[in-house]
Amino acid sequence: MATTPPEGHPPVDWTKWEPAGDGDVRSPCPMINALANHHVLPHDGKQITKEMAIAALVNAIKLDSKIAAVFAGYAVTANPDASAGSFDLDMVDKHGMIEHDVSLSRSDYALGDNHTFDKGVWEGVMSTYEGKEQTDFATVSKARYRRVLASKKAHEEAQKAFEYGIKEFVLSYGESALFLGILGDPKDGKIPVEYLRVLFEQERLPFNEGWRPNEKVVTQTDMNHLIFKLIMANEHKAAEAAEVGVGSVHAVAAAVTGVMSTYCTVM
Ligand code: HEM
Image 1 (cartoon, rainbow, N blue to C red):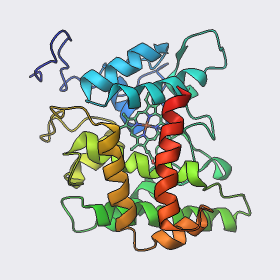
Image 2 (image 1 turned 180 degrees about the vertical axis):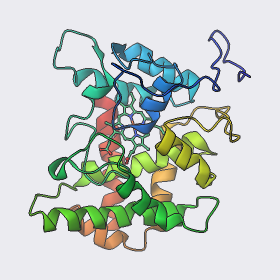
Image 3 (image 1 turned 180 degrees about the horizontal axis):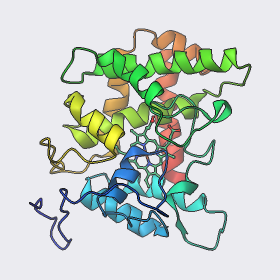
């Protein structure tokens, strides 16, 4: 069964899914890996141009083209061959570019493997959802913040520098906002917990479980809404603001908008 394609674009058959095989490469991002597994991006994960990435994010999963262009633009610059004009999925794990500490499903750069799905890290995050079938802002926010604390502790124990400043803060909140917006209604923060497991654990879009692409694209306004809801739902937002070195929750909120627009003008 295929979903109705946007006019002028080929349909996506979301039932077509194959994990990476020999010689295929993948990234630390569950979504772009899933798109490769569904053949929306090249299945080998290689030679993806900015245009190909933008088209996949906009047409297949309904992300606004400006946001898609920011991620795709960064991804292309991760290629050590600056003249290539494309990237392979395994290039985007470059630490400090998009890849950052406190990932929900990967270990951190200074602690080992920042690339590969880590069941221990992920189950630690998922334990916050125990007993829930649906997400809500408070739980998504709590799960994310607990991961920040766990990552900080692990760095302290290993006597490694923990990198969690405003950029990491925005990316981390942004990634939770992205899965809520793309897998659900970008207003309410509610998606089945099962969708999260399917995306992260199988790197697959949960079409078989009932997910359908949104009718409208997820815009920057939607993203700001989701991020602010997540920040406000964090009981420890003041402590977190101090941790990222901004000082107050209001200053963090202002910085989020600032950093977002910086990213958008960079590209
Ligand atoms: C060209 C587009 C994209 C690129 C290059 C990209 C790249 C990345 C990278 C490098 C990470 C690792 C960050 C970390 O260290 O945790 C990441 C994480 C993530 N990305 Fe993407 N991404 C893209 C698009 C998307 C989209 C459209 C979504 C929508 C749901 C998404 C969802 C996520 C999530 C939820 C994570 C967090 C994974 C974790 O914390 O374990 N990404 N992405």
